[in-house]
Image 1 (cartoon, one colour):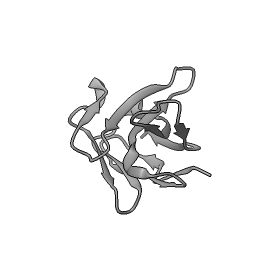
Image 2 (cartoon, helix red, strand yellow):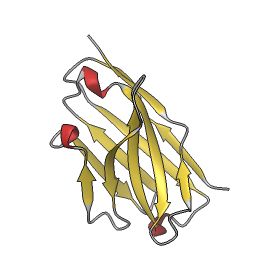
Image 3 (tube, helix red, strand yellow):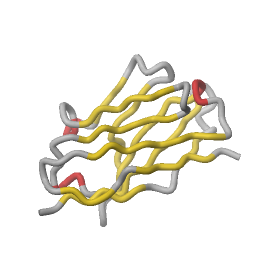
Image 4 (cartoon, one colour):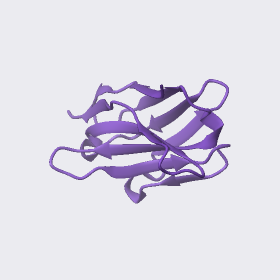
Length: 119
């Protein structure tokens, strides 16, 4: 059974930092591209960052470029999202997603972790 478990969310003031983690189990982690999505209240879910299987390629939502960094540790089956210079508009539930690099129907989601940026 595949499980993705996010952690690290919380409440932070504008300009602060948080580091999200997503621990994966039940899958061959290196076969999966990993993604972070977010969904703010009354908005559609959006893709925040992507990292390739070996971590060589990353892609970011324009509004988080230069502030967020996605990384992965394939020995620990974990993907991270380091979020710096947080803004109120970053407030959302953040979801981890794993998608097989060949069989895209093998697509798994975590339960989400709340990030709130407010003064």
